[in-house]
Image (cartoon, rainbow, N blue to C red):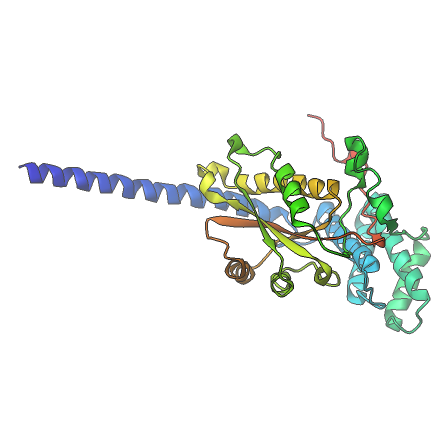
Length: 334
């Protein structure tokens, strides 16, 4: 009788947790389906260019890639020709549908003019078809060329002890490194970054530091935005979030929020301590994510948020102008 009663309790216990697991899987599937449906409908990944925002997002990504190409420490004359052709096509499509009264469109035209001006000094470096395409486009939109920022180390660090408004405005992504980063100073920067807020003070952020040049190169080969400057980095930081610290499916995006806040705080801290830094997105395919995990022994319970290339700051360098839109365009009163 006792054995029968105990067996009944054990089976009921196992059944309870089995049903609980099934219910959790159902809730999880529903939550991620909810997210995926919105992303597929409204991102530029699936139905491109069917809204003004999608087309602008494409144009901004393309003109910023040209800006970065102009600023590369080892600039390749004739770079980005296919990208430039696409940018012109997308600008013309924007004009056709939305007109010319948009600050991002205007800046795109200025970047095209800067690209054209740069290559005027190097005849025969551009395909003749592209040269004609640029000339025809600019004849319809005669804006002055943009100008990427020329900077010295002294100017770059000028506001490191200034009030926060000036300090924050002085931080730019640096893609030209010279010299090493002192690990003691890097430790202080990471320690300062820990002042970032986190959900219920759970502090799930982790920082991996890669020092070896060969391993840095292997890690950067898995990332899609460091060509032309990544090899100059003295160290590479990998920011992750530990999923063990999150409590329910309603917190499915919380790791990215925590990781984003920590990463921004770290970028400010690196700038404060005079360390050059460039955040690198981790929009990686599954194979690349698995490759980075294996390379750096990142456990399954952690997700990669982003990479940060860091190094010493050279005496002279260029920065992408990366203009910000007017504040009134991002404010919505309700």
